[in-house]
Length: 306
Image (cartoon, rainbow, N blue to C red; front, side, top):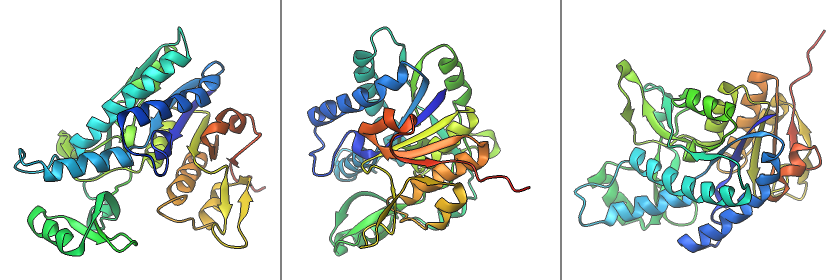
């Protein structure tokens, strides 16, 4: 099978971890150990998050006295793709002797008129006191919002992915037996208006970008790995219960939180509804068991009527 794997942000930095290089090097070994058995049996394309990393780079860029303005988000996304891609490539190279591995910086094309540009909602960078956040909003032109913990943070648009610019290149590499790492952080978000690629002050959701890539690659399976064993209905309530099997319609009817399981559920639903193939959501360490039907939440096509 051809499997697209979407690694959650916890792949390199667990909750409470310091964002040190050595910490991320150690954590990425766990990633390679979890997915290497799948590479022996299937063709893999690996995508990944970059939330903690781009937040750190954005903060550093904002306060760097050598810069007249912070680096734009498209360049920061490219930086994180290079760093995380290198970490993953080295770990997978060690875990899969003789297996070809390549990490690509990829670009995700979005529509310039996507309605998300009028509704920034994705947090980027650290939380600030109210006065400082409003000062950044005035002088940097930022959109800001309360973070739910007493602070304020910058929020940016998250438009829907239309296509991954390098899909054909990924296709050729996978066809030659190469494990490809790409679409990090949802890919560098660009518009293609009038045939010219333009960077944006926006980020693409990594799971939705993985679903778009998986569909265009005609993948057989989309595997979304996170820090919980499966999707939960009524999560965080006394009635919480695992969802072990669902259709796209059932997932969408679950109305999962937009800042946690929501994008993962929507990504799985889009891929399955668009292809008739399978997707699953589950824990990183159970990657092999999920693909073989022994763990996670399986997302299957709606049954045809008639």
